[in-house]
Image (cartoon, rainbow, N blue to C red; front, side, top):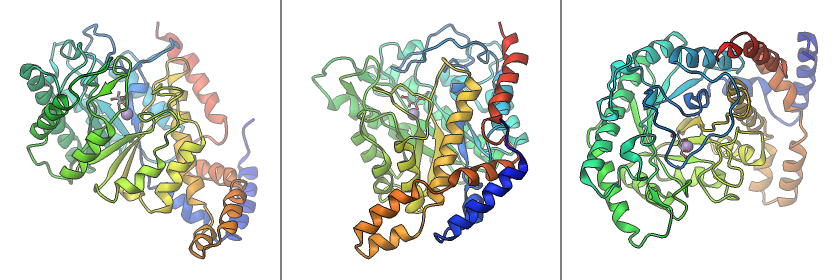
Length: 422
Ligand SMILES: C[C@H](O)[C@H](O)[C@@H](O)C(=O)CO
Ligand SMILES: [Mn+2]
């Protein structure tokens, strides 16, 4: 049942007083939250399909399961679906686009031939919504990636092709960033790896390092463009060895002062990334976060408000790392309504940040004083502080549905729009 404006205001007033008693200013927390953009990944909207229409299936060791009806089939449908999701999420956010979502006018444009004009509609769309954009070369779902290797491929001609694609992607990212007045983060993720135990673990990494040096050779203006590199532990078909491992990219990013992308689903199943954030930021200028949720493997489940997500948010807020962290989402679930997937994952990410912003300052004082009893007691008590009414008030002020009211809007969109997509 929808909450009335009056009950939202009354509950918020009580919550505000309760938080004030712990030294927390709920107004300041909401104001800070409003400045944090989340980059919504276009690929949740069409199951990582892209618009090349070559008939090439998804590859690269990632997989989308489910066949929920109504997936976006064209750029216009994808933009309409994103607009619906954005109307249900408080705050101003960004769009994260993959290279194979370009608009190629029915022509065959190979990955190394993509140019800014293929993304002009996306840039115009983002501009009209006051959004920034992020970008990704697409180094999978292509015949030249069919054997599982791209930038580290043993054949120079194949490496050259992917180097050209990544260079073109950076140039496009820089055009986006300049046009939108906010730097585009272009994130390089490649699938390269072996299903079974390799003999030579070093040669592919040397080739990858060399390819990356070529990709990044041209200096781009950081006002418009930032480079990120994303590691992974394993993928489907690369269970035994991934060239771009955590150690590889951590070293590469530190040496070259690139952004390190940490994807929450790219580590061992019980390994959280929260503890890595501050540490990595001691040595690289900024990071890119891929908020995801692995279930048993890097299954890219929709992000829930779980302990892992709350720890990530707490780490960023407690250490004042938000200004150096670019937050993007990375999940793809085709078993549920795709607009609901974006909405649930983004709202949860924001909720986790709000909870962290509302954390009582006394926690830090207790730790500083060496009072570990109070630290534990306060941490546990803070879990039941009334952050929910603050979230509701935030949604109302941002003019988006409060509580589950957003779900009614998704259902109505499903009936009136998605159902017509045969
Ligand atoms: C589609 C994306 O490039 C992809 O999800 C990447 O970021 C990744 O995490 C691959 O596992
Ligand atoms: Mn990722």
